[in-house]
Length: 66
Image (cartoon, rainbow, N blue to C red; front, top):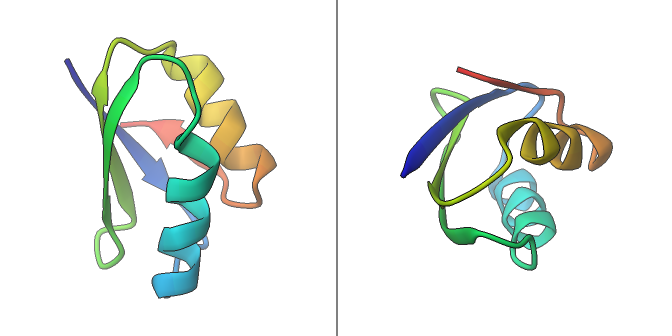
């Protein structure tokens, strides 16, 4: 299943790498796709959307499910 999040404050490749890093070990995450221009993160997998939004937000990038 695909879930999209709106993620504020992502502006560069470093931001993209940080978001991917914090999601790499989260249970249920199969893949992560970041669109810096649209400021979105699309996650494939069986995830808890609220927990994912919190994980991204705690990394410094306020996130909400789209």
